[in-house]
Amino acid sequence: MTWLKRTLLVATACVPAVLSSCGGMSTNGVSTKDTAQENREPAELTIFYPYPADWPPDLFEKVFTQPIQQKFPHLTIKYIPAVKGSSIKELITAGQKVDIIYTSSGATFGQLIDNGLQYDISPLIKKYNYDLSKLDPTVVDMARKLAGDKGIYGLPVIVLPSTMYYNKDIFDKFGVPYPKDGMTWDQLYELSKQLSRSDGQVQYVGLGASFGHMATLNQYSLPLVDPATLTTTINKDDRWKSFVQNIIRFYQIPGVAGVSKSWSEPHERNRFVKDRTVAMFLAQTALYTEEELSNMNWDFASYPVMAEKPEIGAQAYPINFYITSQSEHKEQAFEVISYLTSEEFQSMNVKQGRFLTALNDKTIRASFGKENSLYQGKNVKALQPQRYAPPAVPTKYNGMVGINAGIIDMINTNKDINTMLREVAEKANKSIADAEAAK
Image (tube, rainbow, N blue to C red):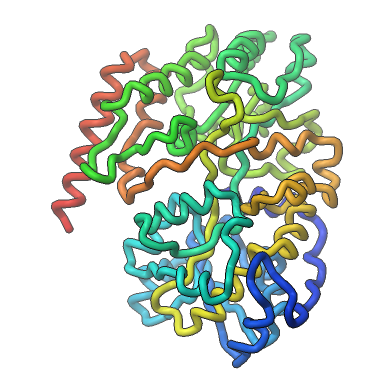
């Protein structure tokens, strides 16, 4: 993952000072009258993040540590990124207690649940009257599904973009109209055909994407693995076939498949931001930096929709703050993560264009990038859909379903779709069965 590094670098201003709370005020549904009177003993909270390249200590300090400690002077924040020797498993072995784990919904099993660190914060939500309705309902639903619908382990603070970047220069070069919000997949395909053409020695491609993220966040809300049977669904539900057929047609446009043998997300993204031979890119992992977009005439258009569900985008991809079972300061930790989901903290960072909000607040969403020159005049409303698709039930074995590799294989070899789905399913089911047996 590199989304945090790319996302946070777009913000050039320092984090402004955060005003201290006043007794009796409300912070995103948390009564500060209660919290102001309790848990004021000095405490150190350790926050762990598993991807150190994404979140170096100086950025974490500016965006999180400083505002937290200004808001709660009695707390000290100790940040531990997962550098060599400090993975979550190594920290547990060394006896280092972690109060909060900050990670994506996709990494929740590997970082939190598989290590037995999950803790149901439902009693704290009730005690402090935390208003879950202020969060986007789909990210709350995902948080509950990660807990097996038996509670909730953490609060979503950020959601990753669900949008389409496009390079106006390529559209202008070929005299093609720019993409519009609300386009269906069929309309996008027709547009992509007009842009997938050669010019001299350069082959341009209409659309780039990350197949793995598209599958995980699919608009059908299909799970990759059936949680009841612990077998993959990709060879059992015909909608997966439709999903693959929809993607593969963009790479069967004449000239496209010959561009490369490497179609994974980093290569696709680099062709858009570095080579600048891709006209449109579906972004579900990061906001791009001013450096990456330098001298590009670019804008956003909304993520394409299915004709039968014109208001439904992809599933949300939230990033959560989880309180661990080993924390000795659970109430203080809850106070912190509540603040990180407050209108105060969210609005400050959303205006700076640092991240997209997990709040169900149209005003805050609409304020994205207002204080960041990179986004002036850009179609920022296209960063999030009108409505996210309902979240699919996650399992710890989603990563064993190699649909991304299967689609790449189809592009490179013209393999039959039924053969690909069967082979990927067989491999996935064997890997899951072996992992279950090893337990």
